[in-house]
Amino acid sequence: MKVLITGGSSGLGAATVAALREQGDTPLVLDRVAPESDVDYELADLADSPAAENAVRELADRAGGLDAVFTAAGIDHPGKLTDVPAKEWERVVQVNLLGTAAVARAALPYLERSRGTLVTVASTLGLRSVSDATAYCAAKAGVVGFTRALAAETAGRIGVTLLVPGGMHTKFFDNRDEQYKPPPGAKLNRPEDVAQTVLCALRQPPGCQVRELVVCHEEEGSWP
Image (cartoon, rainbow, N blue to C red; front, top):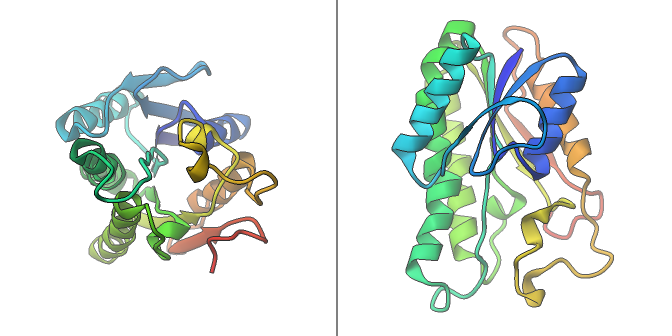
């Protein structure tokens, strides 16, 4: 199975790359930085939709098609609306929402040929909004709506799954101000465990779809 993964150089994306390789599949990475693992990749910024679409086509054509796409890339810039610079606020929406749509748009012809699967990544904060996260909540809520609409639009042609993860032990929180980092002892999931749920969605038999998955630590504070 040939699977294109955005954000595949770190975090959940990298964990999914490793899980796929262990299963004998072929991961293809689209990221701003090169992956550490020995896989085919293209460098692109998801805030640049044309560049993202071109990178998807380059990877797919070299691989001879795609069986699945996993849009794991995501960023955040927490802070109050009036404190976050407009460019940074908009970049969160561009990468998380518009980047997801751009990758899906470019990948759709390949997935239709293979009757493959698209798995998008929202967040528990796409369902439950909190203060100081207007860009992230707006973007991830947009991913929820986008994915549900695309699932209806492509029913019978490709599989579409919405993954809604809670917090994970990744570098996602590293560059934040201390007030926006998880507190010591926070209940977070291992990305390796969440990656297994992605593989589950990708391996459903024809005609059977996992439409939505909420995956979080059993004591996750952002759910329900």
